[in-house]
Image (tube, rainbow, N blue to C red):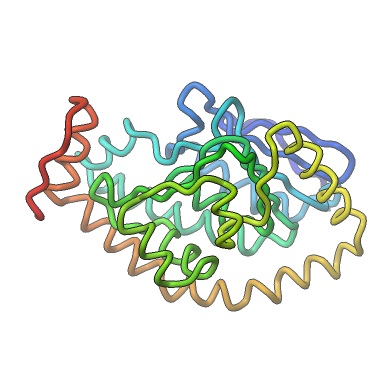
Length: 267
């Protein structure tokens, strides 16, 4: 095996400290909103780091003040007008989730700022999550007329139960990190000033454990989660693709552009 080649990434930034590799979503001016390039690069990274002998633990975080604001609105409008681009995006969205689930290296979410939509999905599919206590976490797909197709319908019910997941996914309401911790959506909410140290201490602890034992434990735990993702994601992605063509989705996007309240027709 050879070390991962970290050159050639444009939307990700890396920092290595011994066996811990931190990967930062690196579009801070856009609140680390995900576009096609970032999704493709994340898929590539989680696939490649699986074979990197220098990395025992991955930490996923965001550059700047946000973890991730979700999908890039410009890109969302683009795929609304050009549906074939949306189909390609959904294929990469599914591949991204499975690249995280299949990656043998433990992935720790360091949620330094708000995590919305796909940003929340990325954080929640990590193996262990720490968030600064001011952070808000939400999956507001429905707020822009989308079905929750990129993984939220898989992971939220597993973490907080079906009824609570529906309560939040039906409205896109945000949870503050301490409440998210109380419900089990994340592992730990900590003061922002302590976030780096808490994540680093846990990452070092895991990195110091027998690597194969940790990796095979992750693989065993993820068997059931992968089965669920396989059984749910094709349908949820298909529903999101259908919702991409609805009048209410277009009205939501127009209302955001025009800075007004949307007027939904139910279609």
